[in-house]
Image (cartoon, rainbow, N blue to C red; front, side, top):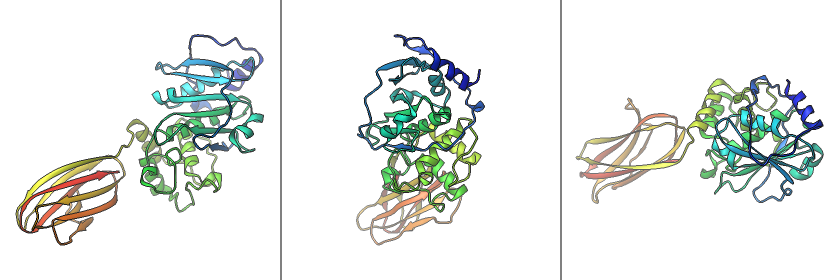
Length: 343
């Protein structure tokens, strides 16, 4: 039975909510066609929207993840909507999501915009992965809307640029790391005016491009945005890899004993597009220089050759791949320590 028909049947007559969680089968999203743009809003943390619905149904997906949907609408079986959540790409982060089912007539007040058909609110992106979605039971494009809103919840789980203070994004609106750079290389999205200014045009918000790419990743291919083209397979692969292997900043330290007029190397690999800062400190009364090379090449990407025993290469953007840090003892010799910060 088509999803629309299931919803109509559910709206006409529905059983009372069950005390025990109901197991739901995932909806096949590849059979769904998007009908319109999902004009929504990402609400600031702490925004007061409305109290939770009076009735809550709990569900489990085929991996045992527990989630619930609340509503004030009487006589509505929420299981068809739960099947959408079970069918979209997700992990245990679904258990940190509160889901509210309302009507389109209520959405303008809840989301603070008359044209909104849904909204997402992160609890506290700097400290929490939790969030809340409001969607409309009577939205004719409800499946597309739910998947799009879950894209914002996925965005809230993944680091990209916010912790670096770039683009003015929040953690819930900056996309994910490798997806962002693949999108930028393929489509020059920054040149197309894509950014994070909340006063800007909805279609040019980075978080909305990300959420719609998440929709495509889930098999709904009716592209809607006019600000950029549909994602390439490379962008979708990067997005999937970001979800499977989330980027996290890290650092490491190495030391090398460097004879005078010789160079010693520290090798490292990057799995993600990264901003790399390299610091080096050597013995007093030495003059050490610092270099950065791609693996297998003697061509220098960056260098720091001031006088003295300390050098620094600051926040260099590097693509995934192998690299070498070179420490050259121009004067004196001794053990030098290198610290590499990957952000």
